[in-house]
Image 1 (tube, rainbow, N blue to C red):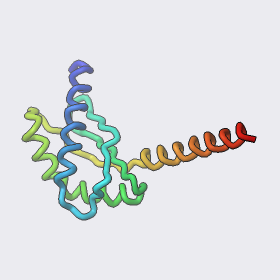
Image 2: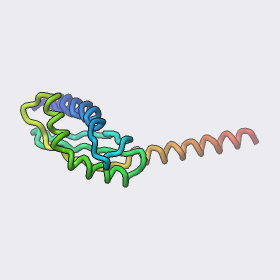
Image 3: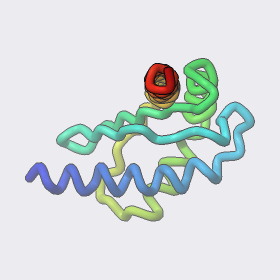
Length: 121
């Protein structure tokens, strides 16, 4: 199977998952949850979905538990919208990339602030 087809399916799955996650009513799933990355195996058997929460890694881990219990609903909705012959099994993985991004942003802001103070003196 050509690589561009897998890439297209990966992007389609990611786009649809973002919409579907807004419909999940499990209280463990955070409202501030983001799909960071989606990896689909070459035979379309498995799909790793990396999710991150603004609140931190612990919230993301709790959300993954809720997403695993709602995976049947998510997979059904995904099948309705994508019309694939073989729908991959979803595996949700907690990721802390948003939290690390905020930390990096704060460090850059502090560096900028200290440079501005040095220029004033």
